[in-house]
Length: 404
Image (cartoon, rainbow, N blue to C red; front, side, top):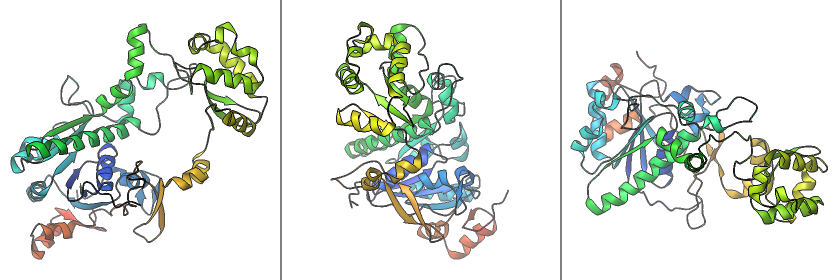
């Protein structure tokens, strides 16, 4: 693990929840930033999303490592005062409040910038800050549907389906991260902070750029092609004699190689299959011919023969198969940490290497309000004032029941 920490000394106030914002701030922490997560006394929603491990939702655990947590009521005057004090000390604020909420709480860009002109403020929203839907709430599945992403996902003879790994949420977190890193460089030049806006809408359209280019050129809607690719053929899952696998014939030389391995040299020179464009134009027939060929051998036989010939292919792994694979084990992408209850838990690393090394294994995600009192002491609050805040339900620590 590397000690590379380019953001060491950068303070991040994380006012976000669920996935996009927390993923962004976790990656900032992986690169050395000090991240303080501000939560209501009932916690980030994902703490309560099943499945659970040690009482915490696993979605929460996946995106909140290497952070401290303070739990406070931002609707109270004292809670707002605390948050303002934290913003004065911060380099970066990341928030994902619903439309109009940050202004009502006094935590909007203009208010916090007045307190700290060097502050980089990243707002994450559903539909962005301009346009008739700017007040609309956004969720990953909503933007997958609104953007047309769902319309191109699934098999052609079945209803469209949602991509289950929340690509719009996760992609928005990565775009927010890119914007924040650019803003840090700009602040280094000017000494002034600035606002960064990331939205699920913008991310979804960004992800669909090459589909949209094809749509504008053709003037027709793209068709669902299951595990396939609208511009390549054959390039999808095929059944073999025992188990499914992916075949990725991405160009014409690979098509020739596939036909050679399959013992079907004549197929490579058939006029309707001669080029990739020809095969795409005759997709149904080409896929049917390849599907028939693939059932002649077992998956492992195909993987061995095609791999030796340089034809891209892969098993369709389960998560269990993928995590147990020697390459995954050697990659360093999975690391282990000690949970709050002392058990060893697994997590996924930041998917980067610096000087050939993974970022240092991040500490466990915090319990709700785990660092509340320590943060208040750092801000200069006296013990009796902290005790009064607990009595009044303005702040809370682990184990304290949330108040209505």
